[in-house]
Figure (cartoon, one colour):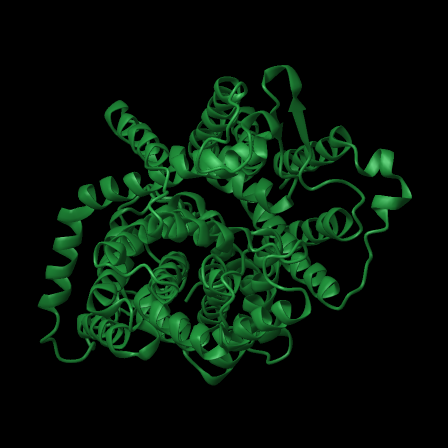
Length: 639
């Protein structure tokens, strides 16, 4: 094999997926699923699951695991075990990414049980995670060819491409690896100074007092700048547009109309005149965003139905095939019997296990059906915005609307029925998060040249083991602080508990949900991409503004070399390598900062040292723009 020093231009598109030649040709035999790769993958999955469970319960966000997993995999395999094997490193990174996926699935809903005063045992978390993870990993199988191969170049999978660049640069060394490591160092240093030492704000914002108290701001995270550069402006602009509708349209409109009300307007228990922009977003606009995301999901499923049917037929036709001797490594999918078996196993256990008694057969059916439906949506959305920004909680809300509504229609409105609804929703929530992470890892595997089947098996093993440690973190935080307190707010789980209670008591703001649905239908009729706009409605404007900055930096690089296509490609690729490092560095340092916080150490002296400067929104925004300027200069001056 003639080793290339970097991914080919075709890795990002320009050819049909069937014609793409992976980094490691299928004619080259390499060990992939080994004791080294499985063991390291599980260790990293445990670390990322614990860190993300902590962060998610504290602030409602998780950090990327796939890219830092790729950095750690290449470094340890090559530096300690002297194994320069990119396929092993890819499997390690894929298993490690499950730590982030299951943490997101768990924290978004299961702590709602604690908020109602019930115990959430470790085994309950493990069982729900295992069932949801089984569906999430293998429900992507019949869709893999369409999402990864047929849509090559159309679905970007930004974090997947970043992970692929990290793996290639790490295995080959040279200038590319130095670029990634430069980005990693700057990203980690930036995170330590802002998130660790608190030398500047990570969420600067301005209240527009004369515009009904609306808010505009940035999430000044190096990872968002990196993702924005990788994605470009199209997807990020539509997401930002959705946020403009929410934060500079809907929020001031609600404030203007409701300011004179003398009674709280459902679902809030607070007067609108006393509410700030964040309160209005949380109590009203989030339901609109959830309605848009759910409707976008239904429309996406309908449009994908012919391809899904074709994929299933293709997979079914291969059931009788003997062995995989004539099948290329990159086409070694898990057998369709595994997919069907996963659905049957989850259905049976979700029906007969005592913890699901109140939901019964209907809950088991809904768990499998909605897991498949949103696995399709999640896997596709990660191709647009990456797994880190996958709106798992929005799709979970849509699931809970149906699950809780079905139980109520059956006359089951007790607290035990509410817990059963959470458990069924938990299976779906984990499946959503895991399917997105699986699709992302399968994209990287396709680019590198690995086996989808081996990667999926490794990911399932990793998530089962990591779920135990995620459950231990929940138990630790609840014992030490209490879930739902100021220290551990568990924002998504709190929202889920409100949704279920609202349905069971007949007090859900359906009007807001249908407003979101109407916006999604408008996007479809106008030819606009629904999901990015819906994401903009659902997510804070700060996040989407931060991503947009990265997209603008990339456009500036492209325009500087618009008259020389070859030079432009090289400069953009250098920027993508750098951006990949930024994302990895930010994520790795995020884990370190989380560990420091877990240990009870306070290193954030910046907030008290120079509060006038460190707490200044303009200063932190300027630091973020300086980071963007550095990325631009590095890209255009790269050789």
